[in-house]
Length: 416
Image (cartoon, rainbow, N blue to C red; front, top):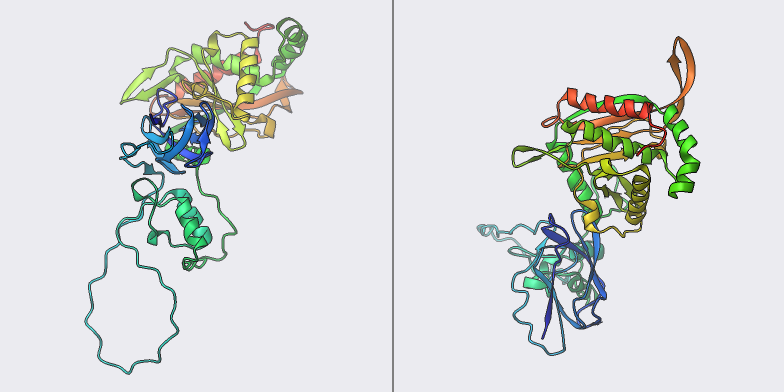
């Protein structure tokens, strides 16, 4: 009996997934548990395993298609099985379909004129009419090969034009479409379509920037004492706890406690209601090859410095290796973005919506500071908060920044 493969639901908030790549084609043998495709959720790329062994009888959605969770995307079974009952509802594409084309009304014939000499015959393509459904991958390949995909007959779900249709047309000598001339002062050397993680990041950043009114404030923090505490405790942490605690670990540790002490920055907007978050779950912005990921340290205000250090390092390594599960990216209530390693002194971070605030951390540098009427060298850094001004007023945001500054400038010898 044929086994359907539905779009998996990987988390409570996941509603749909985008098919990035099929690793197996129709008619190929698959083993139970074998990776057969890659999908993209709104947070992470994920490898999908086959639920059964047999033949991949049919794929019901193409690369680039966006499919609701629970909707079948493939059928696995034995050769000759009846699968006509699968795939009656096509997936939607991640790009807009071509608008319907209407024919212009006929015009009156012109007055007779002498007929010109006959021209040499040229190959033509039938004029496209109606709505045309094509996967983003098919559109990209069509542009590269100069094929007008709108004139092709699709073999995908619901007659959708897929990449294979375009390549087959090109191989058969199908007439190519003229390429549009470059406009503007210079032609573009090349382009990469927004897809996968990059597309999700673009959508989320635009949504946060355009929908969230921000309040921004910064403060310079003297980290000299924090560095001294770290150096004095370093050997004990390594010998007794087995961890190498970084400055960023200490900042995460104290940030979680400052959020607990200033709950006004630990809120979110849900259905026009202000929801006070009970847990302090700190998101840690991690740069990865494809863009940015924000894994979450849950209950960070209740964890010791060695637990924070271990977990933050493990999450960062998993993010860079592409091994994070969706659950590691959900549930954050407050995010920390540290660009100090890149030599950035201060910056304005975009709020990780639907959270209400994000902390930015700049590079720690030795600077000239006035102390008791004298100019002395101290190691300082700029920290800043960007907050959703619909939810967080200026005074509570400033109170949080002041609280964190106090904690970082007067740290305990052995945080616990």
